[in-house]
Length: 479
Image (cartoon, rainbow, N blue to C red; front, side, top):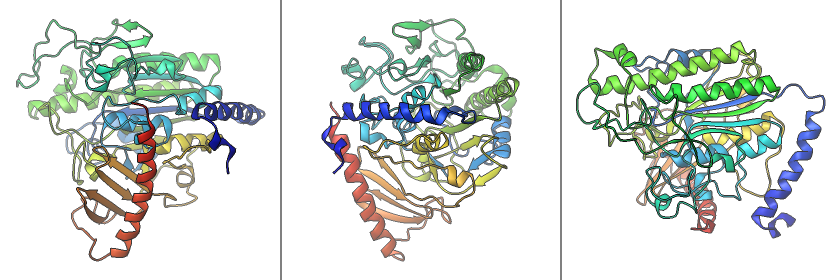
């Protein structure tokens, strides 16, 4: 039996950290320059909300260029159909239910988890997080940051800002903000006017840079620009200091409140008002992705930087009337574990690590970030916990075409679930299941349960085993 099983989670984490320090020191001797790592993510951007995925109106020239110059994942998945859980999966490589992050603003990165920021900081990386956080409270004071549910009732219990998780530089909000003038209440977005008058009230979510440290300057205009204005100086400072960097840039766009700037709305003047606002926010964000890439090139680090891009879940279809997101040919939206709720845009540009542009049809998911980055840096994963992601490097490098592990999804407190491999997807809702050939039928229209009973039975068994392990960890998370 593994001796580590007799130790507390905190002691296991400390032992792994000590071992990691030795591995990193040895690997650094005579090793080639380690890649910089940037993880970009949008909020509620649908699979169809890009030019390269065929949207008839949206202008995303910089994302389109990334798809042409790097890796385009045709089946990239968010770990959940809801924002906070997906974000937890990025930082840990584990299904979010394992740490109690089951819904928006519910749960946190528990102290027993090993965030990727911790690993990379131990490896000598400068670490920064910019934009949305959504993985715990930023203040212990009740009534701040538009909290609800557990966050509102016990904010101190869920106090988990990035600076408490080995992030050196932060510029973050706890949750959503308007996509234009992010600190101002935009007023009633249900009215049809192009530019509804903002109220004199603050929106209620603020940008934090540290404990009790709030920023109000340079927060007017496009929120994606406001975020990038903080991320780029961090990158410049890291380069000047000679440090590799790990940068998380999580845009609020196009989550509600959806407010488009006049310059960007004008690009869609022939579209309905709601569409103009929605499209404007994505095009403004796309512009910032182009700005980021131009800066990486100017600094001479574009070749050795892993630049990832994805959305946190599918597009919303409730609440603000300006949610006009597209799932393309898929079915379902945000909150659904049908394809439209979890399949999202996915891109990677990394010239030093990718011999030539390519399209990858094998499924990939946000839990893969952690093991893929560890693999790229030759850092071993801890052996005292289950990881739900897998390294994508063999697929990216062309060493194999299919994934070597299945993907599990849970939704609505585990009452809905899915199990998916390279070809088939089992979908279980309200004790009813359906089996789809997700390659031939991405719209999930034809149930194959009757014609492929053996496949369904085996997937049901595998799903039940995996779900039992995940739910057991969830049950052990403190309230």
